[in-house]
Amino acid sequence: MRKFVKGILFAAGILGTSCLGYAFGGQIIKTEAQDIQSYTGEYAGDYVRGSLEYRQYMKYAEEHAQNVEHTEGNTIYMLDEEAVLEWGQPSNEYKISVQKSDLLDKLMECGYKFHLTDEKGEYSVTESPYGVITTSFRKYETYDVDDTLNMRLLYDPVSKEIYMCYVYSDEKSDADYTNLALDTLESVGVDFDVEKSVFGEKFRQDKEKVELHTLENNSSFITGYVYDEACAIFFVNEDLGGQAVCAIGADFPALKELGAAYYWPQN
Image (cartoon, rainbow, N blue to C red; front, top):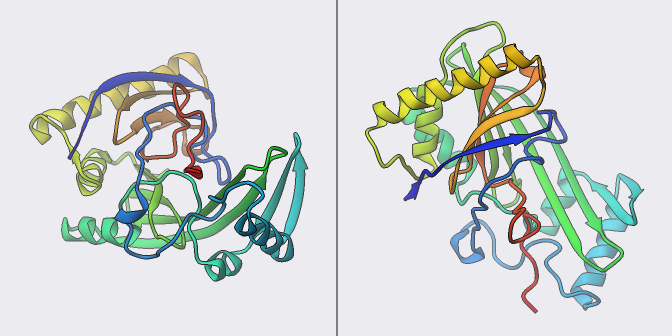
């Protein structure tokens, strides 16, 4: 079970469609390949520089690219979901070792009702000038939960593992999403290390502090609390009415040690 460690995060960023979760600090949850049952083999892009696999994959990316961008020496190939699924390997970004269907099943067992309201995908292969490939295969799904709450899931369409899960109130509702957030945290294996009700009260207090910070500073800066290992944070976002949002996931660049939130070849 994962346990919370309290910390504080001050960072700049915006919760949008293409930049969800990129600018946050926290501890990476590394999921080993042997823990995943939905596929076998390596991660897409996790190939030794110059190897046959490397060359074959880059050729595949070039042939299936819907769009190609060049920025700061990197070449970015934008793929569609069909090409990602055809290759059959998940991206080499870090993820939570929980699949989307498992999370939703557990939450529905808690009595929540989900209605899919939006879905989209962004799938990219980036080749650096030093022969490093990073892949990001993200499917976004937004759900209405019990008519007053929302959940946004980002997951890999191959492994079905979750990158990030956002829990927040409907823009037209002042409903408290604390219980949904806590049940979500439990569903991904978090041990609160205290009574759930006690943790929930602290959760509410922290959320209110973040919202108050927004009102007092009129700022779009992300302000939040990091609970390590589960990487649950609160942050403020103008797109969601300035409310505090609970983000749960593994998409936090390892600023102190690893340098990036990706699996890399071991040889």
